Image 1 (cartoon, rainbow, N blue to C red):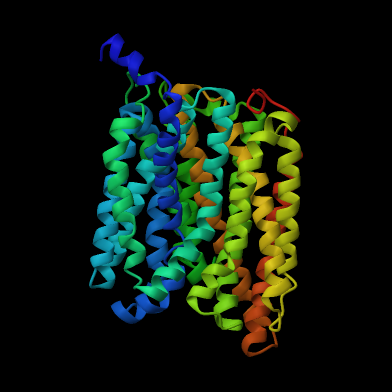
Image 2: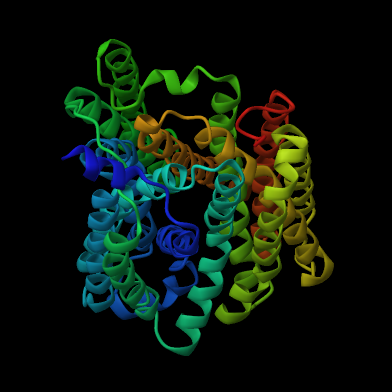
Amino acid sequence: MSQQTIHRAVEPAPARRSGLVLAIILTCQLMLILDATVMNVALPRIQADLGFSPTGLSWVMTAYSLVFGGLLLLGGRAGDLFGRRRVFVAGTALFTLASLAGGLADSAALLIAARALQGVGAAMAGPSTLALVATTFTEAKARIRALALFSAMSSGGFAIGLIVGGLLTEWISWRAALFINVPFGLAIILLAPRFVPEPERRPAHLDLPGAITGTFGVGSLVFAFTHAASDGWGNPVTLGSLAGGLALLAAFVAIEARTAMPLVPLRLFADRDRSAAYVNFFLGPMAMMSMFFFLTQFMQDIRHFAALATGFAFLPMAALIFTTSRLVPRLLPRYGPKPLAVTGTLLMLGGVGWLALLTTDSAYFPALFGPLLLMGLGGGLAFAPLNVIVMATVPTEDAGAAGGVLQTMQQVGSTLGLGVLITVFGSVTRSSTATGAALTVDGMTAAFATAAVFAAGTVLVALTFRRATASARP
């Protein structure tokens, strides 16, 4: 590559193009996040159409999250080495093709295979989305605004997925929840090479030992947490996967500490605020995913909401997350990350704690509406500063790796949290003397109470942030 070409590649996007560049990146991120929840409300119809067994049905969700979480570290470093825009486009293309195949699937096996391929594409494109934001928007205020909007897409996308899934399932078909990715994916594939700048690549080699141990270590942990949700923590397969994953990750850390060009540079964790932000990106989803999983079931099974009504019930939360994201770029330079993160995590704790008070007679107003408002406002304030803390001061050559670690924390945290909370739910329902709907609600409230413990952890971590950092002030 010539010096002139390199200069053009790293040149910031002109102001008139920056909005389009951000729209392309955020559309891709929203697609990837939507697919973590968009199939939730459609599961009963998928089971009826394709003949899934009750246990096999969970793999419609698990196949995506397992592959996505396991390959994120590798996808992040691949973007650094082979070109972030190139890996971003290639991942989006694979995700789009897999979405089309999933929508056309006529058997359970084909749908699960398509969902796994979606996970591969998402793991390639996901870390590059965050890295491209950080390297394209180099001016401080523009970067904070872009990262805040990225955070809104990442946090609000889970709720939007339920809304979109309910709409498409009720009005068209569960297959439409997969087909809808195709036109957006094609638009990204066509527009990104023309408008999204390609950051400079550095000469390097892939850390193959780190890639193998890191990928299989994270994948084994995600599988262990997922398997525990259905078969329990005492199951030999669960314990074997958990032990194997921990051993592989220990080997991964040892390899990364010695290699010259690591998959995940350990210097990413040298900054105190960045390390704390990673921890909260792990703990926050542990608490949030319980709300999506159990509250969806509460609305449909206990309160008998239709699929469409269940999706729209989450609209206040999604709206508040996006509204808050518009305020964070103004608040963050003035106050720094600590006040916003502490306030946001306290609101999240209040929302999850409120859900622990549900009964079989709890109506949408205020028993569900109130917690959703608190979680929406709290999630917007708590997570938007974290993206800025992680990405604003990271060296350009490590942006993909930093994004990969961040999204790995989010993905593994949500899977671990759900595994723990389903185990709590199962233990309570097996030991409770209640019956019918009351028994189910007892298990759900115990799970929400446990999620509140995770949320309390995010408050404690937020208290460790410095009041203001270079990453938070232009």
